[in-house]
Length: 123
Image (cartoon, rainbow, N blue to C red; front, side):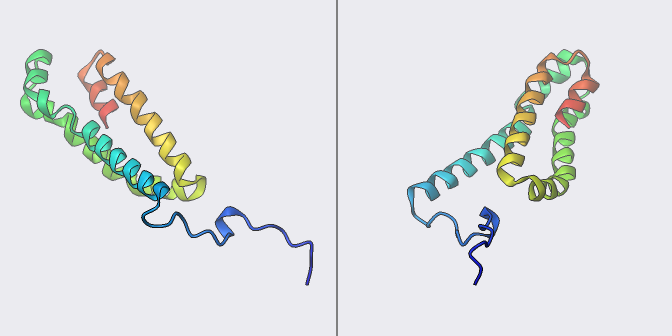
């Protein structure tokens, strides 16, 4: 038996995760639930102001609704490719990048000078 064996990486270790019911487990579940709420809140954030958007931007109701439709399409189109990226770079890192990007893009939407740019940022 060799004493020079390389230590196991975290991915190869015997660690099985947090125990169900533990404080850490409950905190992770709460964090995931809040992340889900935040995702859908950002996705549908324009729903309540669609009539105002249409009026203020001089666009049709259907065009205003594109702010939700394109965001939904963007989410649907990127969720699978991003899951493969997460497998390569790690889920925590992928989530941090995704949250940071969503926050930055979300903050840029109100500053967009044109409606097509609003749509691009929402997508």
